[in-house]
Length: 83
Ligand SMILES: [Zn+2]
Image (cartoon, rainbow, N blue to C red; front, side, top):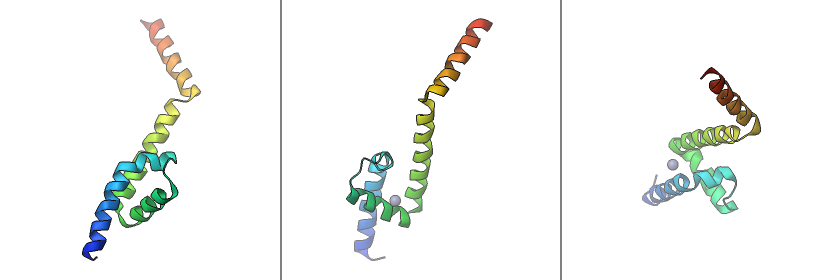
């Protein structure tokens, strides 16, 4: 890898770390998406980070869902009865 390539890699690495959330939310423009897409192809660390963040966001979305809300209310009601 040439020096220029390494500098570009580091810049894209920082960009990916800084914008991963927007990338997963679909809020990045096409240029940004391509930049992250290309970088994650080269960087295992960012691939792992994106995969972890994606799982986390999906988990949070699930927690905000109405079904899980009902489960939470059910647990609270049960605790109240037992108390
Ligand atoms: Zn990276």
